[in-house]
Length: 293
Image 1 (tube, rainbow, N blue to C red):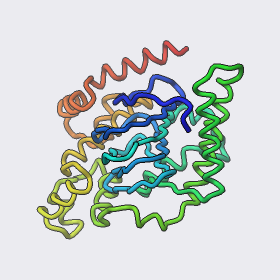
Image 2: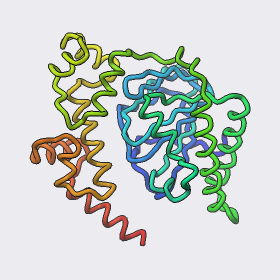
Image 3: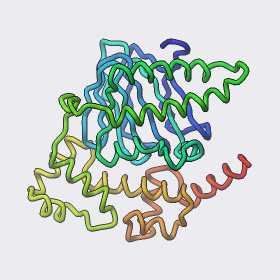
């Protein structure tokens, strides 16, 4: 898999309306902070010594592992030096997937279900692995060339890949739990927070609900998740707000639906997190949609 190795960049914004394909290889550690993005990500690990943290779980990766993250999850890789770090990364626009799925085949299912159950790692069986690897090779070849029909082939191959990733997700053995580090209590807290973003999520409330001291909860949460409880809640509320704005909801409804009870605080937090106001974000969405017509 060395058709076209790219130089790594820290860009986390898609330039295409459908999907983007990257093949990276680095001989030195790459520093990537916690982040999320507006698209789904498929991460195909080829080599290196890497642990990947997604929503409080740390995955110790083996060559040919696949990680799926959706547009709501905070994550970061931790790369150790000494080995070449090679991976294929594919970004997929959820709205693009909506154009190729049908009523019988929900191609977003693996991303949504993995996020819901906080289980992002795939290790397909041998048969599925070879099928998926072959699709990666075909997709990379079509993506990096401009021969007759390559544009159509890209859409065919990404569709095929999504079908087999869904199959692999539901086929993956639970034995890979051995390579996942997490705290079950913190995982329960995370699940509760994400299911109740509009409720009272104060430290006092969470500590009481989960029968744990405030000090112990704060310390372990920061250890496994990488943020304080307050930081995490604000980030997740802002992620939901941004997704809802992207899906056409009004600013007035979004700040309430995402759990904020103070409009000025929401505007300030949104701008601090994303670098632009909700109004500017909505305007940019409208301008981009107009350009695509």
